[in-house]
Image 1 (cartoon, rainbow, N blue to C red):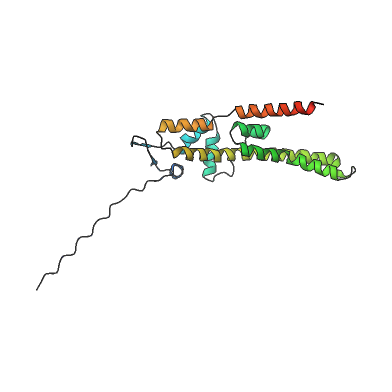
Image 2: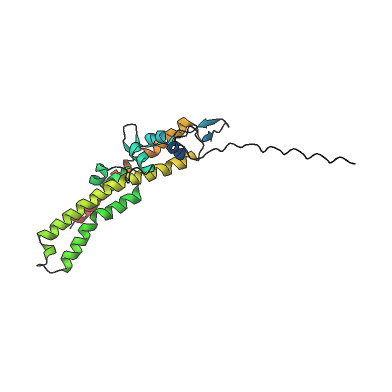
Amino acid sequence: MAEKPEKPEALEVPAFVHIRNDPVQDYLDGSNRASPIEKTNQVSAKAPDIMAEWIAFCGEKSRLPGYWLQYQKQESKDCGYNVYASLFGLQWFFVNKMYVNGIISLFVEFGPLFAYLVATSSLSNDHWINGRAGMAMLLCASLLMRIAIGFWANIAVYKRANAEISRIRAFNLDSEMHLSLIRSAGAPALMPVILLNVCVVIIKVMSLRP
């Protein structure tokens, strides 16, 4: 009687190590693994963790990375209050290279004043909005808008920082160059503010001409 052929042994499936590509999630999970970055010379190196990247973007003395970490973990609903953004509005956003956000803040800041002027021009002079009550309402609304800008500013910077970091990660650079580019992306830009103030002065001068 012919012997039954032996069944071939099952081939062991090689275990592949899953490499996570998100250092942000690694940091939040407390993992010691970091995504390897392939250098141009094909030598892998550990990517800086997200806190190191945030500190490089904001500066070592900034408190923003701590606020951002709490916001990322959903331990806080905001990223702290930015006094400078609340006071300077458009100019602060331009210094931090957030030009669209700056234009939006301009409309938010002057929205109550525009609404007040429209209301006062369309209503009779004896209407309450043309009195002290209307002026008090305008001041309160303007103050609330500035406070809102102060809270919104740090969230806007947080989103810009993460966008810049993601863009720079795609270059697959070594750690030193990686952080250097992040520092450059987070550095303030004074020239747009200077040009903005020059334009304002020119407009004022032109308006004074007969």
